[in-house]
Image 1 (cartoon, rainbow, N blue to C red):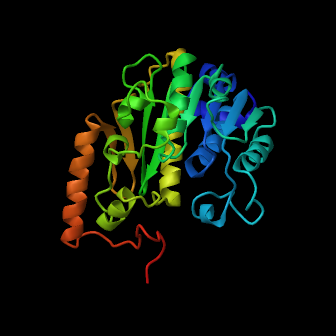
Image 2: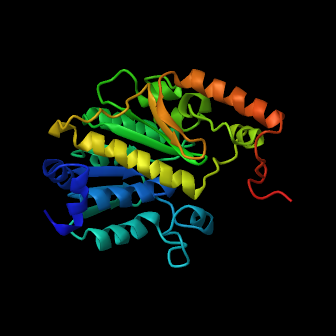
Length: 302
């Protein structure tokens, strides 16, 4: 076993490491969660191939949660910065960059032959998630979806032959066109089952009204921990080492160190509305800390 992986063997065995080493992972989205998840998976697995898709460049706004967003990378494509990081950590890993992001034309080659797909595209791009999900089903590849929420994170997976699809979770018709999906807005009650009870209800209202989802570095790191663990469970399933299976839709896994909670959500929409009611009540009673976030300008309010 190469020395860079020997410390892993205290928590998984040699045969699992070999499976990880021979894997191909496709990651759609190289922003906060996607970038750090890719780095974590490369560190732990040293996979044969990593595919990354993202058309965006780094801007100063990214630097509150992504260590590699800095004065050296502002204005550069995220996939190029990620490729450099991967090549320095695991030079033997082949990196394939899709600088145009996931599109109708490249979704199939992006997914084909992969062992796991990570959907780290933003919720406002439902056509991207739909194209990715459909390609993954055609190629019989599971899709892992991970998001940071507050100081914590949530994750679920879509089995390629399950009736619980990405489209069903998002409330989209099974036969919706990608052009029509691009006009739809994500219903947070369907895709954000966990709402931190410590949040500011004004932030939730601004987000529902169209403001970008706020994100902090603690949440990104929680997403990396939860997502990399779920990825390990996917990739090493064939080893049959008495591990639990990944969490598949309609269930979600969640973890939040600020609230000191973690577990499985079995009824996501009910959990969302219950969480919203608790959050609203605590905010109304003045029990929660206040934040500074508005729909018009999601920045610090004076």
